[in-house]
Image (cartoon, rainbow, N blue to C red; front, top):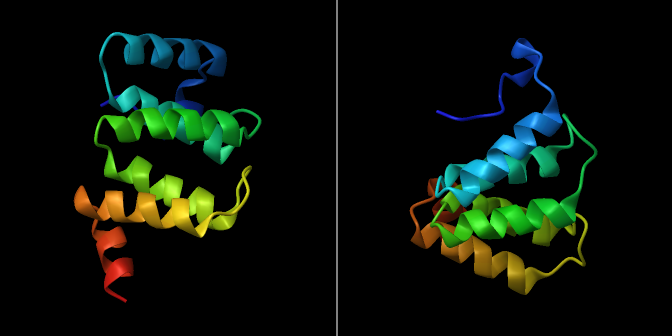
Length: 110
């Protein structure tokens, strides 16, 4: 599975990785958008960029990725790079739960 968890072990150039993920996304590999979002969101491999993270999380969410939806809820409730929005956070949390995210479902039960 394509992922970014162990890039430091293979000494990859992050620019090449980003280019490859964008290409994979264009070629119909939906998990690539989630991996791109994580790269920009976490800021471990490159400078943190919430605008890019939100763009890629939304693209991933459009493919039904409930983890992307959950992460969008987190971004909006915390105001990470955006104005905090309870409404947007709630929307994405509900969408995440509807798409099977256990954590989102548990939060909404409380």
